[in-house]
Image (cartoon, rainbow, N blue to C red):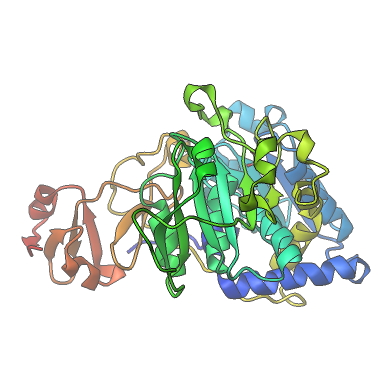
Length: 439
Ligand code: NCD
């Protein structure tokens, strides 16, 4: 199976694992208490920041982190001033910038851009937000902020509220929280939920299950009193009396997000959920920390800023130290070793399964083939290797037995990854000489 080059850097929160996260949060703490001990750790190195979308916190906190460690910084803050405006491909730009810097921090409007840039650049690329897909370093900031307050995640319940469909911070945070053992309540604004399959993929990886819980306040946010709670499988369920899902008694944190209008998100009937002053007195939120990646709009009123539960300015303040720790992990593994990130399969371009169905995918704007990867242990799914969108594969052949089965047949789970031969239709498989294996 032909493979693309291994991805270096950090592209997706899916690459985190519990050991990495625990060690990482610990290291950030060390850096925070002893900044002088690391002051010159990156002297002589150059970090490039390439921001093809607006940013205040993310770019400046990466740059502040680099300066604090003694690295030089080169930057493209406005893509209109770079060759990208003349139509240069992302791959060419990445290759060239990779020749000037030791690491590139890249923000891009397309899903999967960071993975593609990483394949072209000879240096690590760090995803500073790619389309609606991910923002893994924001997740590290969010987790660090919560860990400072709690000292651990088990037994904690976090609500993620708002535009889950287009919000990259929410998507990445779901990976991070579940990998650390927190329970998560998905609170999508009406019509703005995660795409089918995403939550299942995260739950399967973390060993979680989804149950339903209820609270009257949820109705003002999502339009329904019921919500999905993702929790570790081992957790003992409370006894159920009567009908309907159990009531959720408290939230330990609420992660608010804004409507991602620039990606086409629209609030149903013009109403977008947020925190309202009357909700602050409800026992559900009695000890609930309020987080927001910022910038905020009306969902988080300024009247909450002085509330003892507000943590969003602290979150923003944690940006530089968290990103400095990441620079050290990627550029000074000699002195700053951490458990490895999980490598995401870089994908296979063969066979050509047609264009990625996601119009926001980087393969569409760059006019290249969508490489695929396979995910899922209990149900195999075929995903675009750049943007994780499900590719419509309906049949799967085994290259060694030359038999083809329907995607959901148990026989498909027995096929070794290197022998998988995905097909969009059964006829294509039969035309290739595969025999029907049933299922
Ligand atoms: C977020 C982003 O860019 O995704 N901002 C940030 O990095 N702090 C969230 C947002 O823009 O809504």
